[in-house]
Image (tube, rainbow over all chains, first blue to last red):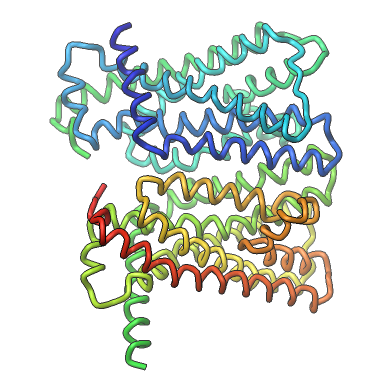
Length: 254
Length: 267
């Protein structure tokens, strides 16, 4: 646990040192403005809840892709990975601590986006408060799990980083973060069902509506299970990476 | 005349060098399955909002706006080339050379801008029919030079910001990304410019994309050619103004960096 917290602490210090880490906190409110403008212009104030949910996912996903995803790679570039691996503390705990800190920082975007909505004169009432909180917690955990998988894959497969850089909008579409999956063509929907964002976004939108939430436990469970799959895949890949680079002496190779 | 030829030669080498840089980032495979898929998804993401609103007119508005915006994004990504020059430690050599750094910086990212324009057109002409839009032929061919105009205009804007990046390199990612989403917000990409308050509409008209995009929408919607020409002329004016500003301010940022020695840092 101490190792995990130490990883989280160092990550928060990185936030202060690198302005790039602040990108989602600048872009997410701007996306919120865009979506609010679209729905206000179309006279569809009933959809402003959608406009509030989507930028949060954009911020969280961006952090998973571009900050958490690069955690191990930047350690290699900085030449700190050898010391990290040689230390008696768990390597995975440090990395997961850093990723968790990054993911939790993403919560700031919730506040920003609610402020933008207020600026547009929109109230976004949360009709199902406790389910809403549960969805947020499980979504953040799933995001951290997915980010762990990315962090490992970026190191394991050289091309993964290039593809990872492009994995923003394809997942926004598949995850139905603004436009529900039900609007997508039929052939896309099976793909969406294995993206945890789609379950999570649907649930969050449902939590804003007064109607009862159907199959809540199952849908929330799907978010958790898919996130856990990411975490397991990430931890497995991390073990493979460490075994491989220890064997071939390429630990610090950039 | 000799100066012009010398500058053209420097610009050409900078373009080629930028192209090599770009293709060291992307292979054909990663360009198609990485960049292209991302770009198609980005335009689809917004076009699908039109489907959510159950409005074909809105779908067309979002699709055209966001496809054309891709041309500007390419131009904005070119700013990263400036940071690379500094990160690679070649900036001091460039400063020591007798050529003007602004010529190099204004040319190095041309390839990225051209790629952005190509991607924008690809997005427009692939996704348009996929979303059931019918573009009037041969009138629609006018969209090609107009998209190029938007790309060039955005590139002039990007070169101005590149001067700022020279000064504050650590903020490169922040400046590039914030600029892109700001343009997406303010340039009439997702709502008509008339939706903004008047003061914001004026700001919008001074930014790249806005006027060129209106010209492109005019071509597709069958507006009079005189109206289209007026919008295109406004885009030329805006691009020229940003280029002038870039040429004026670049030297100031460079000299400031030389004075305090901050240009030397490599990443």
